[in-house]
Length: 95
Image 1 (cartoon, one colour):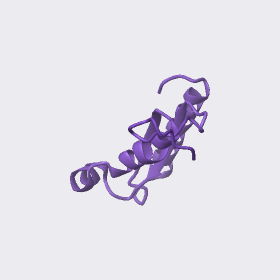
Image 2 (image 1 turned 45 degrees about the vertical axis):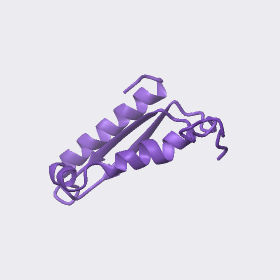
Image 3 (image 1 turned 90 degrees about the vertical axis):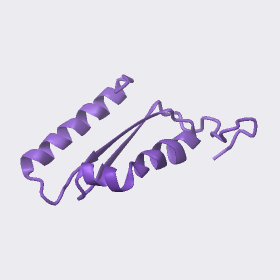
Image 4 (image 1 turned 180 degrees about the vertical axis):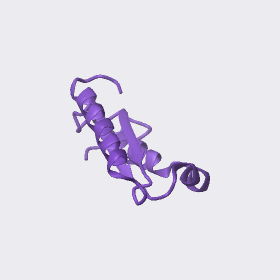
């Protein structure tokens, strides 16, 4: 990774040519409990620490779960959403 020294936030010089980064995480912790206990540290890690440093400004992240109690219909719904997000990003739409 090449860091632009003139950039005060130490963002990379755009070495990743992606317009959007898509991150799909799974969890077994209910979303409300995870948010209350931890906030959303994965958002900060992916958006600022990983893709932000690589020059990607649009980070779309979804958390799916709890996985352990999900059924086939729920998992199919999650996969449909993932497919829609990927298709929209491929068309270069903001999602």
